[in-house]
Length: 301
Image 1 (cartoon, rainbow, N blue to C red):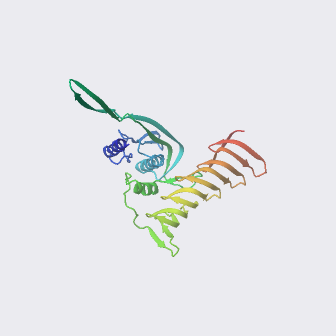
Image 2 (cartoon, rainbow, N blue to C red):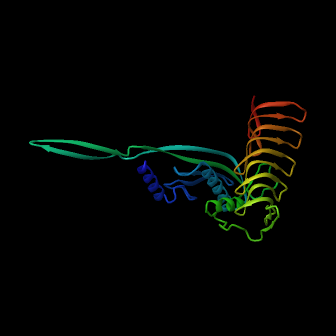
Image 3 (tube, helix red, strand yellow):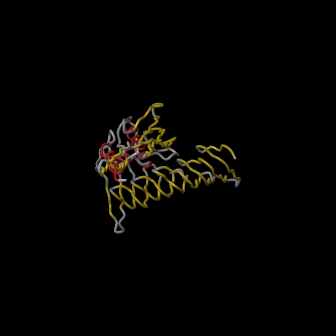
């Protein structure tokens, strides 16, 4: 067991911190991308055996924000995503040490051999990867899909993973941001682009329960983790459309309910503010449709 621990420790030292950092794809993994159209990219990030699934997903999101800014856009939407895990094994070499003990009586010699073997154990490494297909935009107004603010993602995830986007810095705060601390321990913070947040903070980022109002009139109320929507919350569009349910790393993803402006109401699986998966739609005329949905469109019962 001690030998296993030593080997793992040496491997971590050789891999300079073990987990894959934010960098272009190489021997230890990293990000890669391909351009599909002027404002559409497929972005991927592959980790090594010491990188967790959440970190890989976050770094793929960070690269998406980095590319968005580098191409002159300000916001992006994830229109498709996937995660995968590959496995590799490493079997330690076996070493055998032998000792011989001999005793001589008269003309005869008697002896015994004791052998001890070390190694031979096989370790399994899981290597997670994440891929996003993104659309880039120069503003967020008028979109019915929740868009990521590229500068905000670069600031929050860049600070968390000590990485830097091409057109941003690692500074923990942005000049001309105003903040007011309340006696309750929460903070009210206003950004130059018109975003206003009020709620719990940690490391200069929304973390815990809070309310974020966007410049275009959209509003999110719920839980934040590291500056991103994560947990349960409510997202209300300026048009009046509303989603109440689960969020994961900044996206409406999981179980929830969508209330549409025309009176329709959906309950079930949701992705990016649209019915996606199994669910039930109750229309304004009280008719009901149950089944499988994809990207907001009904597929089958």
